[in-house]
Length: 211
Image (cartoon, rainbow, N blue to C red; front, side, top):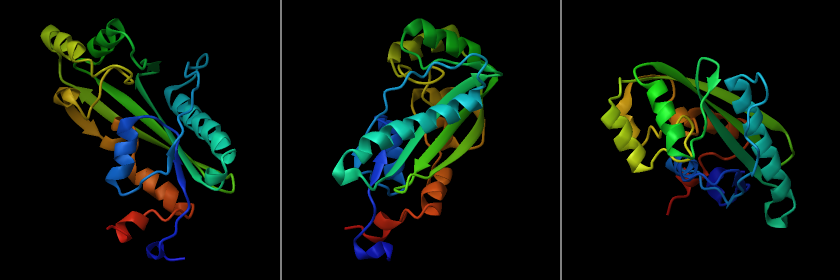
């Protein structure tokens, strides 16, 4: 059926993240429901950063899909989930909740390169799962003590992997980026659209049906 004829399957975003929702909306995709997955995101012993991202994205998708399947209006939905991990070498940085954590992360990242992995998982209405992992390298400028203190005072770091949000004030810290910018924000758009379209979701529906 043509995308422009007024029908499309429903889509569930397995996240409560405003930035992931905004990224989807940026490429003209409007989820029908947000079903965040409440998971323990603690890395397993010796778990590598890339493996953690893939595992958590998959677990989030599966958990949200189970909830969606129990709701008749969402039973035949596509479900999409993502997880972002920031690391220096094999060291996984936390999703910071206290200022001391964020300060430690910023001082570690100061003047050096780090990697950001975002995994995306899509579950189709028939229950098939498809996954992609995206890697981006980011280099920070050398941060002064005053810059770290000012960023901590902003509160923007709260809940962010690695203690910063590249789309916000911390964009001023980034000297170089190699790879996907939207991977660092939390949802790599090229790969997300490719996954959805590859599984039959009419990714351009809203492009063709704009009011």
